[in-house]
Length: 103
Image (cartoon, rainbow, N blue to C red; front, side, top):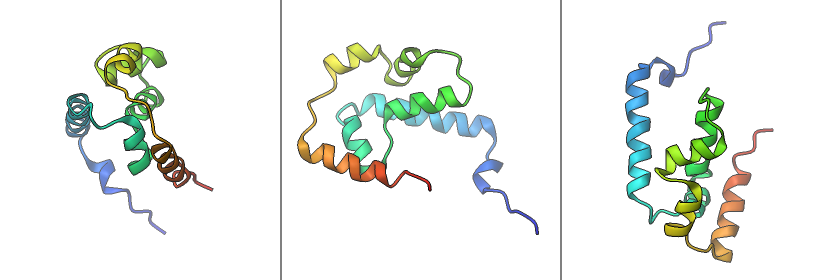
């Protein structure tokens, strides 16, 4: 039996990298899209992207990865961009993240 590769794996790395950078820059621009809302809608956020680049081989630590994605230190992001999460946002995030679990 032949396994068909995911077509995404045929995307040239330079194209994938350009798309990733565009996504990160878009998220930097749209700081009104709170991480809690991204988590509630899609089950991932900027911090997840930072974790994923580390998983992919980025040699920086967690703080450096987050600064790379956020465009500033995490402490500065929280102070200037992050708003308090409502109970509803937290509920949506929990429900969404539960869908990420692979059994």
